[in-house]
Image 1 (cartoon, rainbow, N blue to C red):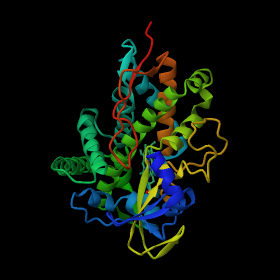
Image 2 (image 1 turned 120 degrees about the vertical axis):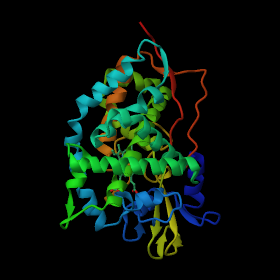
Image 3 (image 1 turned 90 degrees about the vertical axis):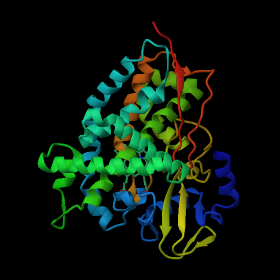
Image 4 (image 1 turned 135 degrees about the horizontal axis):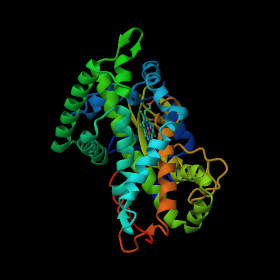
Length: 376
Ligand code: HEM
């Protein structure tokens, strides 16, 4: 998509697409405004989407504007602060070791399947108190729901997955109501806003959002990072010697191959953006993936450079909706990469395999990541 973004930034940075009836925004400053000026660009999309996913998310954090948004978000911020998340590091490292232990002797594997995919699913399942035996189902629903965002149309498969997931969470919520634990669902059940408990749709929205928002995105961050490093063997060697450079490397991967390429908003009132005037009620697509390559913001944006001084990418959004899970995603990526570099010597892409990107305009990542390494 990157040459296309570049053309758009030059020739039509705020662009009306007649076919879809939506406005597309490509430059860094404009994308930042669309993401953060919530009084003008609302996150509330309405819940009348026939597939039901719209409905499920319509009462969740990501689709709510302030002041309700602030109240909902404050219920879960504690669980996702850098400090709270750091406490998970030993568990994440243990899981990573377990997953790599199983493949270390093989010398080749699909890293998406073996590591990047299961790791975030297990971590969020544990935070939410999902019993291990239910993880498989949970993963399947999450897949089906994300694949709908890829194609934009609701399949039968999708509607079924959506119903199953709703039923599952309803049962889990009931169970936690009678036997609360240390997990996020129990926290949400106990929470009150102005003396009122969350409604069942709000609880469901939270569960579904945490399930969908954190999994595939983190999988793709890890996968995209391995791809970036395979293309830059010098950087990979440097990181093996100096793992302390991993955090800035991960920020550069987030900029260079952003796992979330675009986010939606709705113009609340007529608004001037760039040289255009967006009418009230119009859907707006903010192209994060383009903003992160804008030459007005970044020097040599098409270069992967872990030594970039200022890297104010928008991969986690901007403003009040800034990704709640950012500290967790960063930690998982750092632990996963550190383990890959130290445990799989000579890690490189399988030269024979063809890389395939997922078909999506929202999520950016590889379907599979076949790699090889040296075994003893
Ligand atoms: C919001 C990206 C991982 C939970 C967002 C937004 C972006 C984003 C761009 C802003 C949405 C908007 O402005 O409308 C990413 C990326 C990730 C990642 C690239 C991984 C590399 C996670 C994880 C979790 C998570 C691990 C949870 C465990 C959320 C939630 C929101 C959010 C709950 C909504 C926040 C709000 O509306 O206030 N994420 N995310 N994300 N993310 Fe993430």
